[in-house]
Length: 462
Image (cartoon, rainbow, N blue to C red):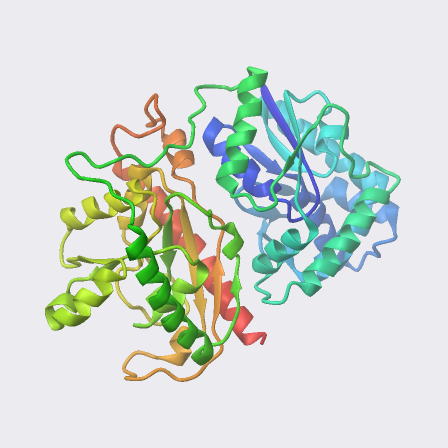
């Protein structure tokens, strides 16, 4: 029986860490915050005052609730509804009542007992729900960073409202008489400020290893590896200077023509390889994506560009692009992409494969997932709000429009490999099963939809 308890304030990354730990360790995980939100939602629907402790306790005792990848309240999927602004406004008040907490703590402990362990995250797990858990973690982060993360989740380009909401929630949670948010004795404090989810996951896995309670081999996040028979060479100083000058000119022009913020860029690592996976709606998406980082980006670009104009091909190749044949699996392009990741450079690949229209990400190709699984590099989904309105299909020239870029939480290939049991002893896969590639591709499609919706909502919100 392995139990891991995670506490911390809103926006610290508790759910992300719990989800990643669960995938790496093969354990179930429970978001207890969703349980309190379900009570708050039910109180709104039934007109129960948030100060009525007895009535709220009765709701918590009688409701049918399932919390997993989806949240079902009395048989209805309320995964999205419990994250509404109305629920945000009362959930701390609802959660402060001792009778509500007593009812839900019983359910949480029953959940752990039924599974003989698991990962539970919330605000009183290390101190009240599971004080004897094998590993107890208090995850925190700076207030501004937590507000920025919460704004991204809500699709709000301005984090000021999220900052005020988080400050109010912190004050309520830490001062309530029943089970206040505290750093429990013996809990290990992890600070996620300025760190990627992969870094936080690795530190948490180190705590699990040190406790000696891992349910099986704990895979380390794999490092990118060289491609056999190829020379892995990082960019030269001259190449980096050339890229920096070209980027300053082109991105500067793009920002003046399409003004708007980049949200979530702080998630991107300052060094090492990763895959940027943007939605694809216009021929200018590649330039808009370049706003997210000053690091040199490498691009997989359709080979038609080289066939149409050798000069254009040479220029974008000097800027880091290389061709891919979209008509069939291009093994040479995939090998080159793996070489780029092995050299520690960021790679941009449009997972939809070609330009699409409309707000829906219907499907993605497997290239991004395959490259991530083979190299160990994380995938960052990128939403581009306002781009299609600026240059709809058929338009020859773009129109001035506000554009918002949203960088989402990374998808970690190690978690998918661990779940499938295919990681080698060194943390790198000896092979990439098609089922794992498909699973990561589907997760990427869902993540792309989420960040694209957030980006479009932020454009509409001004």
